[in-house]
Amino acid sequence: MKAHIAVLPGDGVGPEVTQQAIRVLDAVAKRYNHQFTYTEALIGGAAIDATGNALPDATVDICRQSNAVLLGAVGGPKWDDPLVKVRPEQGLLGIRKTLGLFLNLRPVRPHAALVPRTPFKPEHLDGVDLVIVRELTGGAYFGDKATESHASGERSTDVCAYTTEEVERVTRAAGRIAAQRNGRVTSIDKANVLETSRLWRRTVTRVMRDEFPDIQVEHMLVDTAAMQLVMSPRNFDVIVTENMFGDILTDEAAVLAGSIGVLPSASLGANGTPGLYEPIHGSAPQIAGKGSANPVGTILSAALLLRHSLGLEEEARAVESAVAAVIADGVVTADAAVAGARAVGTEEVGSAVVQRI
Image (cartoon, rainbow, N blue to C red; front, side, top):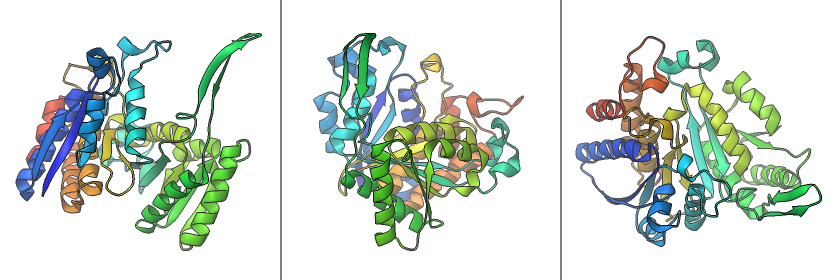
């Protein structure tokens, strides 16, 4: 297979972790006789510094002409002023919206070797294997925003809006995924308070009843879900939820994995749209350039790229198996190392994964 991949290293540790993911993709290409080519493009703070725009038109063009997009991270203290009009996060939100990437998948499967890094006993995490399906282009993050003068100073609004169609398409994705797993979907909302959540619950109920009658569906309020995610994580199979709730819950779920640095994500759109793949962690500016960033989340994101954008299931499983073996051998960066164990650098983890492919 020949495939072209757009690489958006971004800011902070982004360039370091994407470099290791590319090494792994090249190892896959060599082993399975594929040809992968890459084009780098700017996004986030790096793009602001170079062009004044967090998402330059040239970057969008490169992404649209590619089979898939691999992204590092955006943001950092240099661009943190909330009063400026152009911020790195606008690049990330913009590429999702521009490419129509309405569906975000975040699998969570703890590694036994990292359990000591969590606050849980090993038996608490036995059998935990869940996928969070997050709606990615609606809700408060993309709604109209305003700040105006008010008697008490200022009044700000962030409009949270959803349409039936937006909820339907992410629900169908959750149903299809659950049908290939354990047949259970938990829909997370705040239907006791929010009108958008009432629409969400009505729509999920109808779509699952009419199109996925064999799937077991449960509705759960987001505050209960936040508690249950850490109290009884084995009870979840596929979680489907709106944009902001999904953002918060997936970061919370990182505690189950032992480090936010090991969790990948895939952002997908309609058929034919290049998917975007990135670790769920941020740019970690405090360790940028030190060679200590954890590349596993990005490498596993590359595995999702192989699976979802290129249809290479065997290759994706090879990467995931290699990562699991490396972690089991204790070849991990400081964020994932147990007390007293030796931590290695970003490049050493990448090399270890490459050697096992």
